[in-house]
Image (cartoon, rainbow, N blue to C red; front, side, top):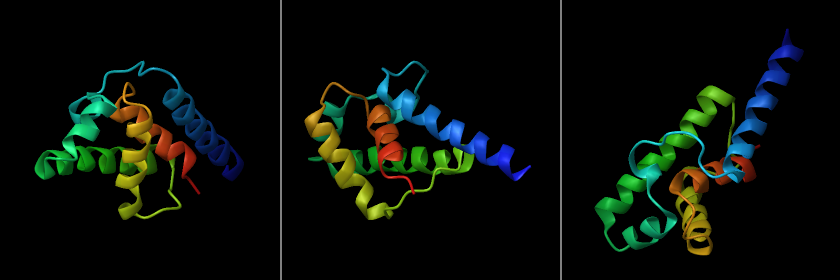
Length: 107
């Protein structure tokens, strides 16, 4: 049973990574639907940026709950990762940046 569970968690983790590499092929609600250019612009407006960041923290938390993804970084390292990703990829969405984070920084 442990083997089956481990394989399932691994498959879900891979699925998160694959989705991160594709254009968003699912419906995203809230701040995650915005572009990375919007994330970068929102850095100038603290309340709006905080709302974006809370969306990303929710995404990362959901990845932990539903796919068993645990990050090897703390919550204070998440915003700088997303900011760097978004500045380098302004046409990506915040969702794809969060999915990339969960794929690259998981334990």
